[in-house]
Image (cartoon, rainbow, N blue to C red):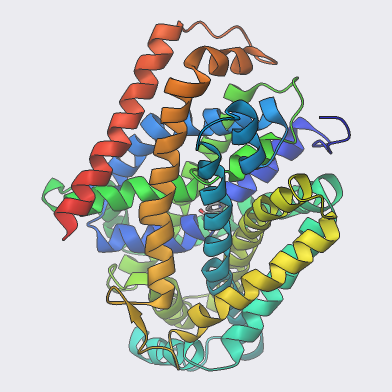
Length: 448
Ligand code: PFF
């Protein structure tokens, strides 16, 4: 489409897409769900999911985005003008809205923890229990979490309103290299602690008895979440690509960066957890209870603590931008809004939707949906159900409506001639659809 803004460079696009993928999912969620669902066997299933469904769905999203040069709703409408396929796009935009609302709450916590560390070191966090109480007091406060959530949303709007090239791309060019550097420093700190070997064993030595169907669905859902797939974020980023880009190579780079950061963060975190004698299964509070306690006693703790929460905040920001961009792109393309207006209005509405999640650890703690507090409800609904469902439908769309041939054609533009027949591509897509479908059903039935 004429006049659509494009990425300024290949590396800019890769950094931005990797920035979307690498987020709280890698540094906050991956470690705690690995801790909760049994360690290495879970990690293995997650890696298999990344390969069998992550790669195909990412290629599908990039291809559809670049082909149509549109947001998720417009893209499906263009490729399938008749029929209900555009609803996959509608669901994507909606999920983007929901995810960012609670994601921003956690991101706000990380911003506050940088401040806490700078102002007070980690004084008063001497054990996980004490640190846990401090976290409970903070997260249940009726004002602070909302304020920090607002600051985070403001930052997302700030970058997105500036545009694809001068906002999102420029931000990622600075933030992503910083993130890699910080993680490197943290790993060196983790593995040089005495007793770190136990942490490595926990991450890399599988115990398959822990791998229940529910754990598998969580692993698959997480594969989508961590790669920003199933809701059109990569589709939207792909829509700012020109025909010159090699989609397969870009996708591989992004996957390696994302998986690499998750594993490296896992190493940095579990080596420290085990070396300092803490429990790995502390749940969502892991990085907020256990970590401040670790930093309180670790040599150089305040410095590494500040770096750690800075890492979380940067990771969250580059992902938050991509979530807001999905909603923004929809209102620019389909409704003719200006970028400024779309990003500000929706940044504000997403902030409002996030307020109940922010309060669900305190004053709204008694409000439950399906037995979960609001924050958990939004999280589970989106990452465990809606993303896998969205991804599943995208694969079905490609097999039965858009056709594998069209996907291959798009992938061959800008890349080396892919030596893969249409038959084989169809087979691979069927395998990934089956993979998601079976995990989804087994997880729902098995969970009960
Ligand atoms: N991939 C991000 C993370 O791992 O934290 C989360 C995310 C971003 C999910 C963008 C979905 C999305 F569209």
